[in-house]
Every structure is written in structure tokens, then in C-alpha cells.
Length: 137
Image 1 (tube, rainbow, N blue to C red):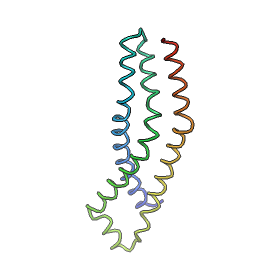
Image 2 (image 1 turned 180 degrees about the vertical axis):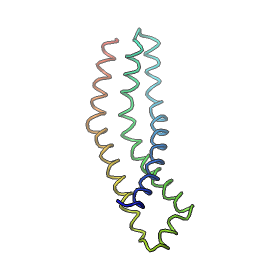
Image 3 (image 1 turned 135 degrees about the horizontal axis):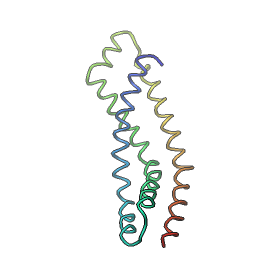
Image 4 (image 1 turned 180 degrees about the horizontal axis):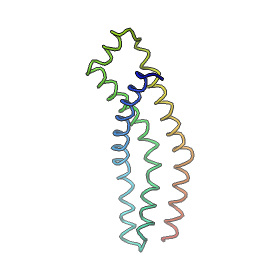
């Protein structure tokens, strides 16, 4: 991947990271309300409550990684088009298809991350959180 590919990848990554963090925070707030209720009712330690908060993240990541990629691609390529970088690339003799490679690479990496969250991390976190909740009850 050349300089142009790294530039496109970096633009997409920064927007996707920002969108992913924002959407993860919003989506995890739904499940955290029940954890606050548990924290008030039981005598759980701070480490246990922190662990339960961390176990909420894999479930949220299964949805927010694809949304973050969408936001990252839209923001990154829109910013590049708005700044005239796409026009300069085309005027320099580069084909528009050169942008497709880094976008597809980023999408494939995000797909692997989302599938790992869906197939392994989410079931593991659900099992661990039920074990902790049963121990607290």
C-alpha cells in the first residue's frame, strides 16, 4: 500500500474510531442502567462492578463496529472530496479505483473484528456476567 493508500486508510480509521466510540457509549448505556441498580442493592466490590461494566462492551461492539466503519468511510471520503484531494488525485493521473483498496482492507479488518465479537467475545461475556450475577445473588 502506497502513500495514497495509507492516507485513505488513516482518514477512514480516524472517523471510524470516533464513530465507534460514540455509538458504543450510547448503546452500552442501555445495559448499564441495570448494573447501577445491582450496585445499589448488593454489596459488590468496585472490581466486580468494573468487570460487569467491561462485560457489556462485547455485546455493544457487535453492532457498533459496522456502524463505525460506515461513519468512517463516509466522513473520511467526504472530507477528502471536500478538500479537493480526490480531484487532485484524479488530476495527477491516479484512477479512482485506487481508493477502493484501502477501503476494502479496512472493511475486511472490521468484519474480522465484528465476527470475533459476535462468535466468541459476546457469548463468553454473557456467560461470565451470569456467573458473577448468580454469585452476587
